[in-house]
Length: 217
Image 1 (cartoon, rainbow, N blue to C red):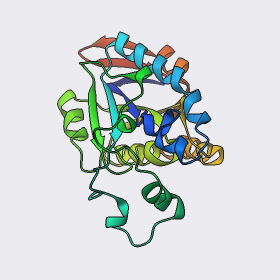
Image 2 (cartoon, rainbow, N blue to C red):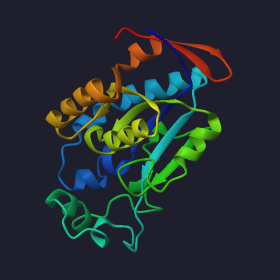
Image 3 (cartoon, rainbow, N blue to C red):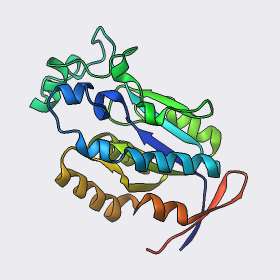
Image 4 (tube, rainbow, N blue to C red):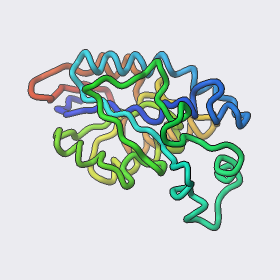
């Protein structure tokens, strides 16, 4: 199949709090090995996207020091893991090293960074306004966590009318089973699942931000 698309690369939450040793997830005792293993692939996707002229969006999970935006200010019923991430260790507090994007993936001046307070990059952010300004119609997702923030974002994107591509070797979950389920859900219901190499081998530039995507479905 051949498609004319106007794509953007989305790099979800590749921050010290989740991906770096001594970040808050690491200090909570989570095994962040799956997250760290995708760094090179996300870097590859980022550098190739920049070479081809694709717009790149980074998302950053943020929390205020006051805690005004924490989930327990809204919800009475929260799973234990969610509560643990609120009560034990402050995560991604604005202005801290923990909240910053990892050094290996620092955004360039031309990249756009979306601050978000919930799982989806769309919720209460300027993301969609920027997409409309650039006439983007296809979102290519990378980052963490595949089964939480990436999946929440791509579901919202699909339901807003955007075409979806998930780069399987540039996304990761703490839970391998959840990761596999998300990939199957995307294949079944939302869009394409490709490797970084497969995606960039399948795309070629046309003009004015439009690209030709050739895939086998």
